[in-house]
Image 1 (tube, rainbow, N blue to C red):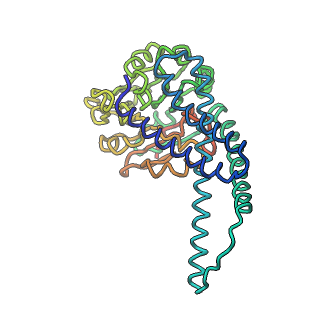
Image 2 (cartoon, helix red, strand yellow; image 1 turned 45 degrees about the vertical axis):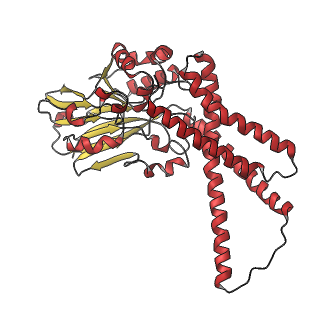
Image 3 (tube, rainbow, N blue to C red; image 1 turned 60 degrees about the vertical axis):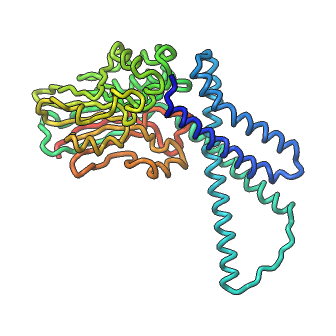
Length: 400
């Protein structure tokens, strides 16, 4: 069943998607004056681009052959990646041109110069527009290729140290590997997950934390792709909390399946881990938005540690960084999150701070809790990672 929130998001997406394509048609095709074949060809391409992403959404939702929908998804997401680079570049160029024109007009007025009528030369105007458009298309293609190459590489290891006051000596160096936002689905498959598992095992962690958005598909379609999780190894096991994408694809089915693969699930719950005589409280909450999909999954860091015995250090797994304020209020020492992908690729990585309270990396929340936000171990949608490489995060606790 498709939630009302997902329907509203899709309608909003269609409005933006359609408006963006109309803008591209106006700014790219209109200057091709006298070149009818180029204009018609461009309209055909933009029309196909307009339809392919919604088609993938409906085809994956209504049970068509997964092999066919996966191929279509590759076309759709590559197209989406090009669109999401070209559109902001074109808008930035037009805003820059508009700003310069206004400044020039103000400068002339300030100097008391009267504007003289300059004969319009359509041929010159179209030539300049087409030349700039060709340059933008070339730049977009180069950026899309570079982003694709980065996205299809195995996530690199990023090492982080978490200094904690009063940490027992036996927990100094306690090693956590964080995996987040892998997004197994139409374009990321089991072979990529198998390589991640192998690299994680080579790090020999004490604990593996999977902070949501593991999948983008139904259990029936991705059973073989998640199988490599059975080979994931850590001294104190691997632990999972839901991300928002799990709620799009049957969360109860996924939460029932993962323990059969050797992955422990935390749904607003905790466990106390004994480590060489020290105690580590490990808690996990559902996604920040989970209550909108399943009322009994409302995210609650305070409930996640209710009844917990005293521990030397407390660690919260929460998919969205937004949970950090509630996590700090609940008394946790560390929170591990993902979700934002760091914007995933340029230029969106420059805008992520407008919609998220925390960016990538390490943050101090309310003066006491450490928050680490991962860039993600996979990608969602467009296979692009331009400027924001994927990561397998290797975190170690340290005595401050």
